[in-house]
Amino acid sequence: FEYIPAELCIVHDGDTVLGPITTTIAGRGNSTWSYPKKPYKIKFPKKIALLGMPAGITFSLLANYCDKSLMRTALGFTVGRVLQQPWVPDSRFVELVLNGTHLGTYQLTESVKVSDSRVQLGETGFMVEYDNHY
Image (cartoon, rainbow, N blue to C red; front, side, top):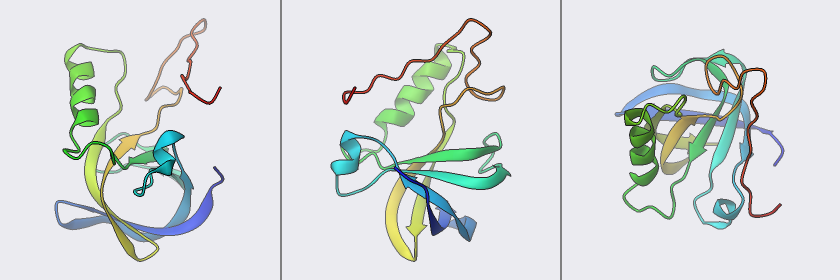
C-alpha cells in the first residue's frame, strides 16, 4: 500500500485528541483489507505522542472487523504485558473520522518496528513476519 494524503480526526472518550490534521495514510493488512471496515497505517511528518503512548512517526489503526467485541487484540496485548514479554504494542480505542467521514471505533496502536522505544533486537537479533501471501 502507498501512503496518500488524508485528513483525519481522532476522538477518544468524546474528546477530539487529534485533528482535523492532514497527514499520510495507507491501507494495512492482507486478508483484513478485504473486509468492509478497513485497517490503516498513519504516518506523521515528525514524532508525535498520542494518548500517553510513546512518541512515534507511525501508528496503526486496527479495524477489528471480525471481532464484534473489539476486545480480542486488546486482551492479547494485556496478556503479553502480564507475561512480561519484552515489548507489547500500546493501544487505545478511538473513533476515526477520515476525510470527513466517521468510520467508527478503531484500535490505535504503536506500529511494530525496530527502535529503542519499540522492538529491541540487539546486534544478533532479527524479526520475522508471518504472511500468508509469501
